[in-house]
Image (cartoon, rainbow, N blue to C red):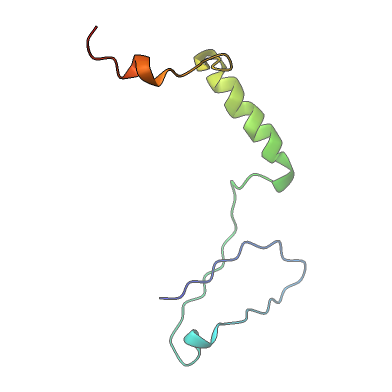
Length: 77
């Protein structure tokens, strides 16, 4: 089943949608509705900063961590 999904910011009252060849001659459904809670594209960085602030107390600095395979597989101790 072919699916077309587009999120647009219309600048006029008409929009042209091009269908792939597989959909020609078949019944299709077209739905258009306003996305009320979609964050503006330019606020993406702010959203990332908000997420980092939420999890800042749970972060662990692993920059100096060294994995020792021999120690990890030492089953004798």
